[in-house]
Amino acid sequence: ARRVVFLGTPAVAARSLELILAASRACQPNSDFEVVAAVSQPPAPVGRKKLLTESPVHALAASRGLRVLTPPSAKCEAFLAELEAMDVDLCITAAYGCFLPRRFLDIPKFGTLNIHPSLLPKYRGAAPVQRTLEAGDPVAGVSVLFTVLKMDAGPIVRQLEAPLIGDEQSPELLRALFESGSSELLAALPEVWRGEALLRATKQDEEQATQAPKLSKDMALASFERQSAAEIHNAVRAFAEWPGTLVSLSIGGQATEVKLCKTRLPPAERVAPPQTRAVWLEGDNLAVECAGGTTLHIAELQVAGRKRVDARSFWNGLQGKGELSWLR
Image (cartoon, rainbow, N blue to C red; front, top):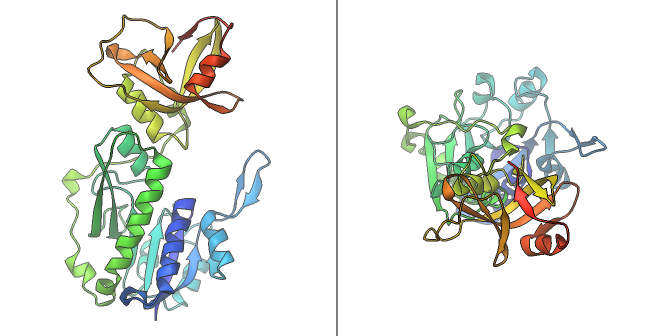
């Protein structure tokens, strides 16, 4: 059987590893391989108590009895020497999060395949799904490509489009794309082992390349005054997991920081209400007028330090506290 090493870190990558392990143990044409090791970022402090915690890929691999390597960097001499001694046929990466040097790329006989959740060459970089949603794109997707030194720039082996309805949020879309990307990668393995995948792979058009830089905490601040309803709705979708989307509301004259958890865009043919900072209940949603006379519906929200609630429960909890309006 061919010898495969998997590299990944977060929960979505652990899901990919799970699917790849299941395929390696099935009796199918593309199952003539075994995962001999998993590589992940080292345990990191998590939560308020800063407990040193294994990554989801590390935890899954250890629970399946796989050899686990957690070098501080993929350039680490001891790590590269260990990998060279493993007689590796193929490396598979999914959200590993470390630059892979030339010496690493020279190790696996059939190269390194990467699952990247965008329609490359669009959205190369750390946050492709979040940037796809933030831009309000009608279609997302996933690419399986050979890794080269330049980030996300290698030839594409498989690519799958995922049309969007406009309400998807990044955590579930990311998971779905890594699942379908893993299936695409597994389907391509017979071609990989025959040495045909690299020959048939499509070169990326560098002129079409766009970047998907990683997110920062200050991106959480939204403004009803400066942003349209669509811009805020897409930010809520993109930043659902982190950093979130925060607005400032006045509840009976008291400034309150609120996280928008789920929003909707009402049908476009609505007549825009007069320019107002008031927040009102419309059906089961809170309605807010944003920049350009556009209206946003807020379905779920969370006041700092409290539980996430639906809009009607929030509205009912306001009774007697005075009027509700926005400050930013």
